[in-house]
Length: 328
Image 1: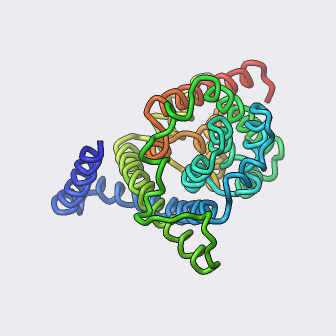
Image 2 (image 1 turned 30 degrees about the vertical axis):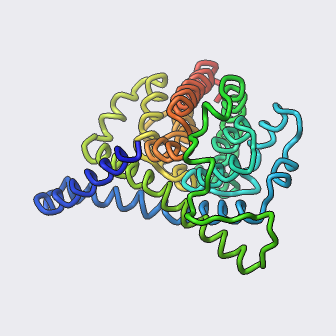
């Protein structure tokens, strides 16, 4: 698997060099470069923040301290973990390395999934950006938050009931830190050494997960370059057709949860129903191309497939029910 990963990275690098040599002046190549650069530059600062937080969690937060934050009851712990995004306000670009460290520290799988999915939505900055994008329409911001919370808790309970840590977690990504040196945090360390160790861990995670982000950004940029967004909108003429179309758009666009509300709001004048806009806003922070590739650094393929199917089906059913009942 490691050799395959290196082969894919080499193939991507060689393809990029050849494209730059022979198609540098084409409009499609220029569009691809702009989209790829925007995705990477938008995500990297948040991912850097997430890996730094993960490094400090690794060094300064013991397993006992982390577990003590959650209730002993398993279902209550999953519900409580969904609200951790309020205390750790990071978007989906940064939450994967934080969740990875939480799992290393002993957070139960169901709780980790609930935090992973809900964190980028209950983030106070995301709530504020949604509120501003929709002209301080509190209903939209609250519907996004609570529907995201409900789906995240349900996903946590679902995964917890089906999978155990050994079948869900990627062993080479969880059992060791990958920082390249031995350490024992039970041994007393000076504060400067702890800071240095935290930065080492953050740098290792940044490289380990960052490569998946780059590959995801590349695939997303290719799809956005080759696909016509107008085709998406034309196929969304019916309210019930608009929901899967907007979900697909969220999966492909790879937007940051702190900025996607402004894109979703721009679809209102086009007649896209609010249920479809919410499907876009809820699915995007939970599942898109770059996230799936970043999940590969933490979870097994079985876990990713089950989680992806559950999230997609849940978002579709929740938004379809909202539209069918005219609740909005």
